[in-house]
Structures are given as structure tokens and as C-alpha cells.
Length: 216
Image (cartoon, rainbow, N blue to C red; front, side, top):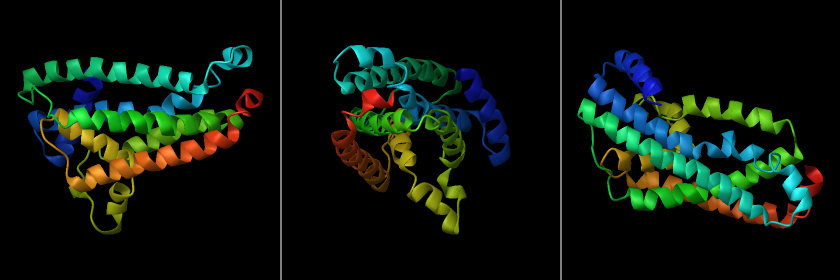
């Protein structure tokens, strides 16, 4: 993560005229936040398929697998957060997170859990989605303001930010990591995206929970 962030900071910092002290904290915190939220596209689609033999032979709740994979992603986030602040000590960046991180992380976890379950069901029902969704994640990593600032967009292009469900979850986490709090509209976007995920998950899981063992 450090090597990738440093390389991107040099490149995009040069493109947008930013110093390393400005670009590295922004890009590295964005990558850290996006990696956690993008779990729903990278790891969640394999959730049921990777545990197919266990699901067919044991009556564990399906939510167990969601909690297991979500916890893995969250633990990785906190490990990388330590590396982030160590790196910031060398470039003069923020050394402590903002207290809003206490609220940002639970929102992102619920986002990951709910949408992760939805993506896992889709990937179990339609096998090709297991291979397609990670590529969608790569596309969203470019369309989401991780390496660039939302202020660079004008006109209709601002829709890439205003209606991007990942932008809200990324920004509330990134701003907290950088020692500040995200604007209220970003929190609204994150909460709406998370609430929508809970509703879709509750509806889809209620209908399809008995079909999952047959899909895999």
C-alpha cells in the first residue's frame, strides 16, 4: 500500500500540481478507505462459493460467513491505518484521526455487510458475476475520487460523485483519517447508500435464503 500510494502520489501530484506532502495523505487515505468499502465487489462475491462444501454439510447461519469476511476486511483496515500514520510522520501529514471515525467505521461496516450479502447471493446465482464484479471494482476505483479531487469535475460530470455510493463511504472515512470531518452531504450519501443496502439485503435474503445451498 505504501509503495502504490507513493507512486500514485508522485504521478498524480505532478499532474495536478501538488506536492508530495499534499498528495500522499489524500491518496493513501483514499486507497485505505476504498479498499475497505470495495470489499463488496472484490471479496464478497466469493463468500458463499468459497464455503460451498461447509454450507452443504453444516447448518451454520449464512450471516456467519458475512461476519467472517467482513471482520477480515476491517482488521486489515486497522492494520493498514497504523502504517498510514507511520507514513504520515515522515511527510508531515496528520498523526491522529478525527473523532468522527468512531461513527464512520460502523456505517461502512454495515454497508459492507449488507451489500456484501447481496453481491454474494448474486454471484452464487449467476456464476459469471464472480469474475465480473472485481472488474467493476477496478472501474469504480477510477470513477471514485481517490486519486483526484471532486472539485475537478464540472457540469454533469459531478454526477460521478453525487450518485456514487462508494464516494460517501470513502469520504467519511478519509476525512476522519486526515483529521477532519466530511461535509454533511457526504454523510447523507453514505447513510442513504447503507440504508438502501440493508433494505435490499433484508428483502433479497428473506426470499432466497433457502435457495443458496442449491445455487452453490
